[in-house]
Length: 70
Image (cartoon, rainbow, N blue to C red):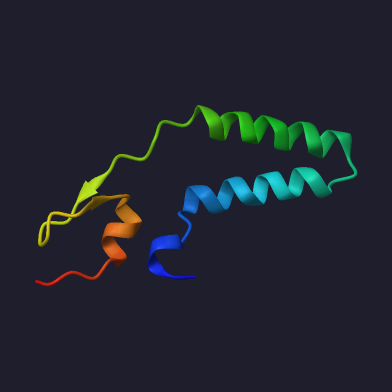
């Protein structure tokens, strides 16, 4: 994946929870995964961060990985 399409940890977590829910045969596990997805939906958004070098604004993990001219 390129830098611009790299998923955040939160996005990856949601994908894994949804995939696990779709593939389980257990109604108990399905209920737990539904509860986990509900809890994920209730999380507050990740605050954006500004690069101190170039001023670019974005998610913290993306700002840490972006390349700018120092």
